[in-house]
Length: 336
Image (cartoon, rainbow, N blue to C red; front, top):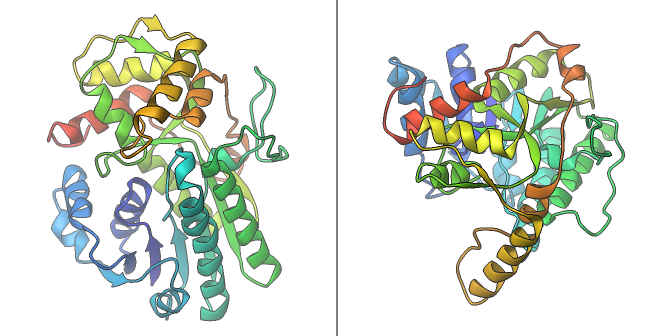
């Protein structure tokens, strides 16, 4: 028996599919009243035998802030995949990010320690990896430092990793995955689906920075492999492809049949944009761009997945395949 948290999110739903296809008995943790229909839609996007696979999932109600509900969910469980997290780059969500990502992970770790779970796979983020000079690939060993420009999301994800390491010191066994921007079917308006939804309408502009992307199917497959082969307390960057934002937005545009963007946004324009959005949403609403996302859009970053490739054998989908798959999902077509 395995437990997966965050099953209605992009990574969590693909983890449910990955483990169900392997014939595993799964419990999926969900908040009371949460909409689980997204999981069935994602399963049916990929599989003709979706209904049969869905029967392998037992939904249990619980909350990351309720440690007793987590202990109940872990009764008789061998492995836990912790994929539940809040993704937000809005400074107004700082306290909520701390509660969900840091304190929620602390509760998961405590429940693992008290429930006899053999191993925890914690889904973290590249946001918790230290910085490096432009032109240097970032890796798992870089020191993390809050220099005042770090987003509240990054702070919460790094703090969550510290909770996992604390659990290991207290006797737990765990492995940490650090995926980059994850592309894949998921709830509209959440995580990378916000970008996908916008690109379905087309744009002529792209920011000047670069980052990395990975398909949600690859993250799920790597989590499954590293649960058994990853080193205790080790972190593994899960990187599909290092890309410029021009390349990323171009691939998504083509997948939706739109003209790829050609005009680069200057940093000053992004600076004005996040300030305008902060004022516009001062009394309500969610900003389309924040100080953190504007800074990220300018930054040149690349990542190394060498450590992961030295540990497991896995080939990643390319950017065009990722983009066509998520566009097909949005348009109501079967998987690419």
